[in-house]
Length: 95
Image (cartoon, rainbow, N blue to C red):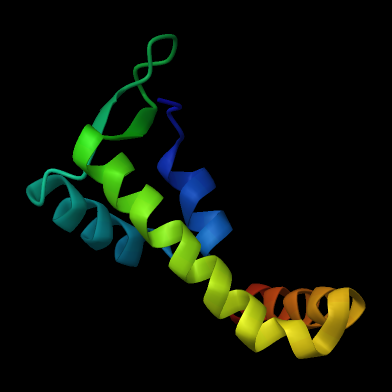
């Protein structure tokens, strides 16, 4: 499974580091993810889904895709892209 850094995940989810830390703590306690030092730079932490986490992700993805289509479908591709850009701009301005 691919490993990622918490900062990358936080940026993608538009989540501050304090909130993300709490979410990651809960995911670890639930056995859905692990944190480990980076192989090349021990100052960095890498995240990885466990087998249980990957299974949950795989089960949830079709549901999320269907909801996204239901909500964003009427906007069309251009309208959905505009909405995403606007929401990201709002989130960036709040940081």
